[in-house]
Length: 342
Image 1 (spheres, rainbow, N blue to C red):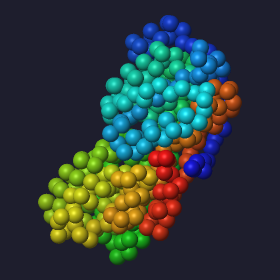
Image 2: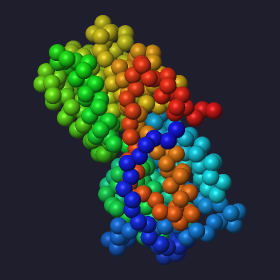
Image 3: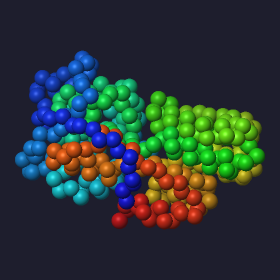
Image 4: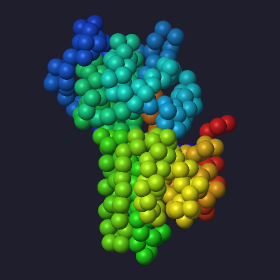
């Protein structure tokens, strides 16, 4: 199931996986001063398992309510089980709240986990917390979204610009004579949505007749997308194609338009390509979406990286996972490849 990666090898530093009491107290207090002394050389685990012989992994997830993240959680639990020396603590859900997530990361620091995995809700608020973990000599895997520091062990994520660009190329193909596009964006401060927007706009610039007539932050959520699409249609906006930064928003927009006369000819492009019953791959198979693009969860790579870290093996500083376009022609095949429900 593993996606191909484009990796950049980075060094990991050395240090104890146990956190000194003074550092824990500083982290719990949210001491930003820790960040000032943080170098870009990330720590590695001390190679000492817990009393039961396992290495403890903590994971702070940005928002379990998003289907992509629920699938990521399921896959991480699945792949961690393949490494008997790893023990995954209950996944912490930040519920799309950065302050909550900072507290969760600091709690994992206090628990002295051997490896910390973080999917940041937003980069700015999470950067000091990640640096605190780094100062505490806890190896950190950044999964999916960047933070504004190099003080981590490995970053694992997709190429969001490339995904947006390929979606834009599909839109150009779908609208050869031009047309009106509306864009449903994720959280505006999140790097994935920034890159997905830029890649798309760069691609559609090849056809000046294609215009983005409306765009709005829908925060990755289906309900927000449905409400926004209803407002656009009620306003009388002429829409030829919906570009949504994830499949759930694309499906939400389609639900709003399905019962309207104006919505019958609208085409939809999404991103994520989840192999779940209500996900984007099935929507493409059923003709609800024109296309979607696999945004790899990175769960398999995260589990393998955590195992390599505790074994004191070299890991890549950046692991960039490749995408795959999903159309009606290959949807069944791709679904089978990524399905971990068994």
